[in-house]
Length: 125
Length: 296
Image 1 (cartoon, helix red, strand yellow):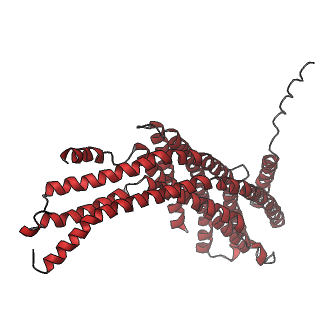
Image 2 (tube, each protein chain N blue to C red; image 1 turned 45 degrees about the vertical axis):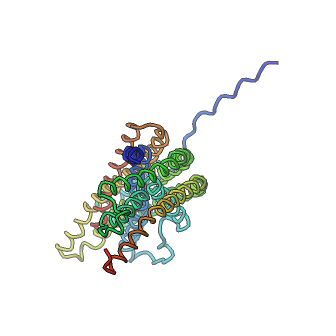
Image 3 (cartoon, rainbow over the protein chains, first blue to last red; image 1 turned 90 degrees about the vertical axis):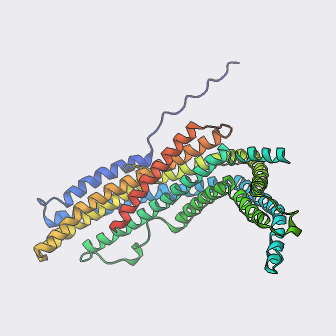
């Protein structure tokens, strides 16, 4: 029985958000130029400004959608940090505890230091 | 006794392993990159608010004021997730520096030195059995410190490479997502939003000048016109700041990958190269944000 050849990968399609973004930016450029063109009447300039405001709102929605759309994925990736963070915190505690143990050993010298200081205060040294 | 002290002197020369030293260096640069990314989000929100204000002023006479429109561009709950993630990155960097650093050994050395000084000063004959010379004190302190160093380095060498390896994928993913948040001007994302918000301020300022120039004195007219090139300049700087932030995040991911990959190497030129890029990017952005903040 002949094996079925693997299906060819679909041709890459343009990102619909990018397509919309490009189209809106082209419109925005035209509306902005019309709104600031002194050759246009005040009414035409105001109408172009209003159109521009509408286009801007749509572009902003696209920009915001990228940010909000990334949130869930970001939370999942951040959760991936937890095992290594737990291990790192444990290592930190381990090193701190080791330092404390060694300091305890050094404190034998400190105890002698204190005794010497107290005896010195009594005028014996 | 002399032999063991001599060994201690030799051991004390290995204060910090190459990997620990690299981890500590990475930590500083990573904290800076995370802070600058927070600055990028703040800049986007602030510029959006400025654009809203400019539009309100330009259209106030013809458009009803709507208080509900005045909300931050970045939704609070989504921004809170970024803040939490960036705090986690900073915490990771701080912990890495603490674990990689020499502080526990330095503390131990300080305590041992202080304790030994008292023994050097002993003068009374009754205590001469305890008395030590300065040379002996130095050797004893070196020995205690070296033992501490060896024990700590042993734990570090065993666990730190595993931790770096485990952390690498989340770091790569997080940096890629944060880079995607920002993007580049012309593609949907925060870089485009920031650029657009300056365009909006410029358009609103032009409308304001056009609508009110008849009522302005020449001096007022000049001041309003002068605001336009300033906005253009701020737009360029902001675009550069966000582009540099994206570079910094990319360099952070590359530096961490190099740190994890070079865990068994004494010299790690690949890591040093990536770290230098990260440090340079962080410094560049620092300059941008400082300039923008001073103009507000």
